[in-house]
Length: 218
Image (cartoon, rainbow, N blue to C red; front, side, top):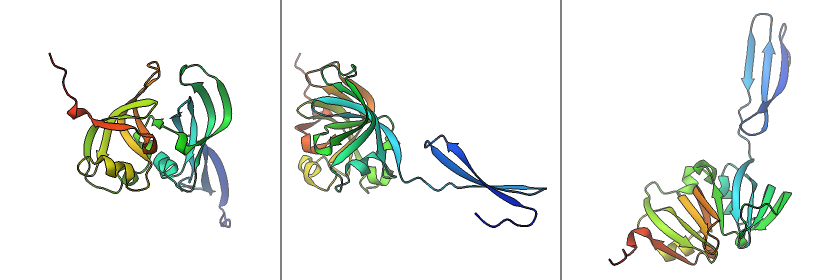
């Protein structure tokens, strides 16, 4: 805090930061005739996001801590092999709405995660990261399956659809599917709609373009 000037006193106050759940610092300089207020608006390095995480046996709903790189940056970070979920509520897949247990923290291996559902597109991360650094992308309506789940939604790719390249190139194991719907193959009651989903490409069985669907014969 700067030294007080003659006739002026300085106060450092902490106020709740409702957006991030932390504290915003206000430096108030007071004199007999004017008040100056300076807001410390420096960005926070870490914050929590709500997420719905699906493995082959469980559904875990809670909060994941991310950096300014969002959920994509955290999940595709090769230096960490696990995800910590705070305020984690667990349900078995065959009874997806029945609470089985509730923990302050749950740790999940990334390689066992089939999909992570997010309610807001901005939670995925910065646009440059989500778009893979490409300015022009082509939208493809897709059906994607793992051995447990089916996902229908929009992929954004730089150019033509190339399945082999999408599955093998780069280090992004979790790929974004926009405006998506997820269902469990053997459990129709498990359905998540109107969300953006990060799908683990290491667990993908197949992909199909919806515009190549064959119409049934009459």
